[in-house]
Length: 370
Image (cartoon, rainbow, N blue to C red; front, side, top):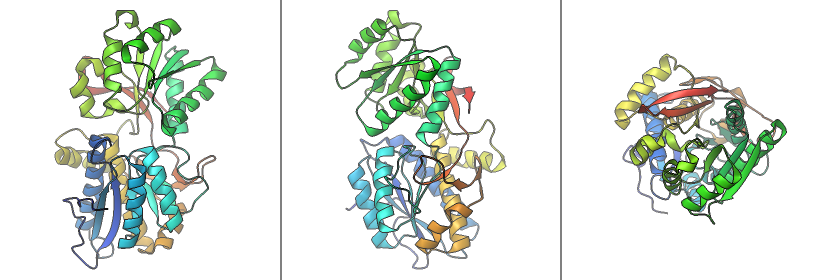
């Protein structure tokens, strides 16, 4: 695979460098804006590590590969990075892609610190080689389900695409809501146009519609159709997967994209490190950084600490996961074995349900914390 290297230094420039492979969606059909934020966080942290003396005097380098949201491409990239001699692999945003990377890294004995993907089952069997910063989908989406119940929603429709990730999300919602009096109505967007979806919502008397679909399409078209259907003036649209987090959402939808609650993984207030990183990320991105950028920064912060403490030996990196205790941008990061999760897991990063303020779509409102 001949993926062009990142301008930030994917080519080997120093034979003494410690290299980390970075998996990032940088081209369509990947969510490119999420990939840009993830890479910005990774690169900023590498710069900060090197400004502080690197890894025992050795520079840290990223070897960046574009996954383009393709699981096969990600698995091939892990193979290539292993051959190149990286100490570990980091990153990835899309859950199905991260799962392919995790399975391959486990098979090769290559440490993988997953930054952003949330699918519970990143590997089929428990593994010592993989750790994750993002909260598992079951954790975050149960918090979202509690938010729905607290807001009075018990008839909840999900507009769902076909994927393991969306199917998992629908199952988590259904299993959590049903014992508490909630009903989940699944609507297959492979069979429904946005206008037909509106008819289904009216017929089912749904009070909330959740977007379990890709961005920008069909999510944007669905929002426009529902917002402009007078029969659905009172329905709440939600997006637990976080599509409204990034600026592209507001640019495409304007006020129609506001008041759509979604999950993000930030604390109520950032500490000194988080505030400093936020300022630097804003300058690097020329925009407000999303939680995905903080996930990228924290990924390198953890790996740099591990590499300083245990060296660049791959087995040593993997063995260090249970001993990690690192101050990240969003709190202290430690990994544990969590029931039902096959990888070492930070349990848990802060979780919020937020939306964009209709009066000021660039401003976020915190609606619920978990």
